[in-house]
Image (cartoon, rainbow, N blue to C red; front, side, top):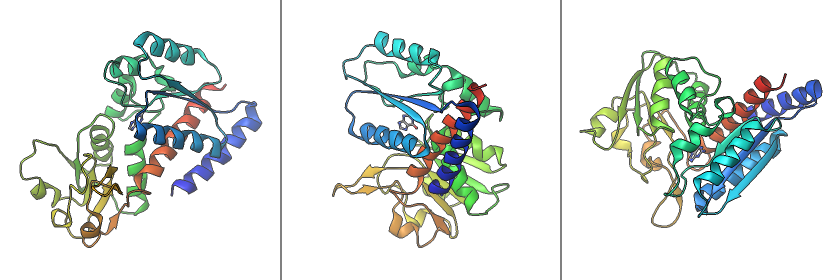
Length: 274
Ligand code: GUN
């Protein structure tokens, strides 16, 4: 699926370049040495290259200060060759993520993390959808199963995934429940789900006995288990026995997330290039 969407993006990029002589540009900022972030940023840059975007990666040292980071964001806000700006999270503890997100021009905020964009999602009038929830929606759509009227359970309430995911499912007229670390009788709720989206960041947290027969199960987690192997938040082997559809980890939601980032960057470029 991710490949199919990327091919379409590549075609649209070629068209845009032919028409305007301008190429979509994405700037990615990474601060420090977090190993997972390094991998994500590398994959984002690779994705850009594949679809014909111009991309720039800015690597700041762990000890970077807010002034330097904000100055970079302001410079990129003004740069006509850059249509999308993304600051990889998490930032080192001494830096203020909220302030950095607020500094990004909402028109270039291809993560859709700026309050202007999160607010637009809330009222259903948006240019960008946050990448991971948008990828999840495409995966659900690919099953052909109608969301309207279904019991949708989102496990996790992060600003990046859980909260916007719940909003998108609600917009499609799902009956949405959000579960989190304080939820009582979690299995009772997850077992009601026709569509279950899990984004908690705990290896094998949801097991087959917590899933309704025939449910669609989308696993957003990427964790390392005791053997150092990449696993999701859902225990795949037990879950696949009851689910009608289930995403693997790795290779499920991850590639879709980056594809949605590319889609947002193309949209941003189309809006900014006159
Ligand atoms: N860290 C984990 N997921 C994301 C994401 O989608 N965007 C950014 N900027 N940082 C992240």
